[in-house]
Image 1 (cartoon, rainbow, N blue to C red):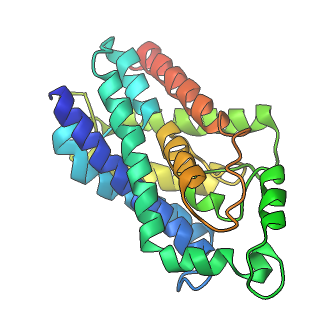
Image 2: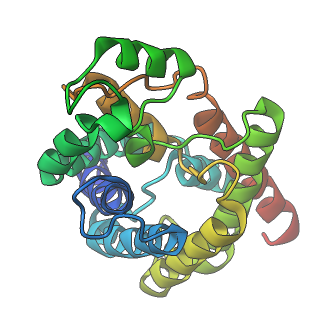
Image 3: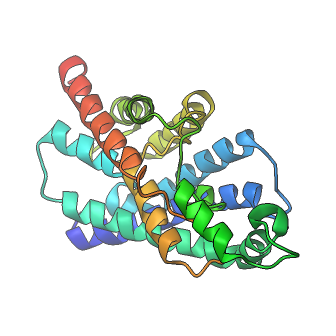
Length: 264
């Protein structure tokens, strides 16, 4: 695979991943969505199917890493770091594109949600600057969960540990069961296995932090949230943003170490 194929494949695949994954979060969260309040099961299965679709689409071009933690683990496993920049660049760009497409698809719902007095306060459906400032001071705005993750209980050590543990499970599954014949990305059966593992992680370990388990999945959409012209969107919670980046990278590195010691 050339660097350009890798970059294009990861951009397309990660964009699809975030479009469908962020899309289910928007569907469950936003006012005037037919799927509003569908619940955690809808979110976990939505993300699992998002992984499946994204992997099958991008695997022929890039091997469908779609996650900097997976790329890091494969680099540690194989000792080849030459394509890491292309993978990571495509993943971040794709995540930003996918998050932007979620905003486009749910444009009316975002507006209705963020101008509703039950959501943002104020008289009638008027947007209020004071409410936006208050949300920024608290960290996360009312629709940030559509774009990126956040903890239910803010404890940096526990939140980091949760992301590390979840990512270890994901990456070990990829390394032991998911790779294609060349060992450089996900295979056809591996895509299905990985999608089911993502559902399992969401159901079992997703409650504390929203299970980013993917630095690009969290960072790219968080950047988009900070840039989009959304009324009363509140803050992007940058004080927490390092956890879903550092945690999965640590988890990916640990998983690669476990694989090299126990399986290689």
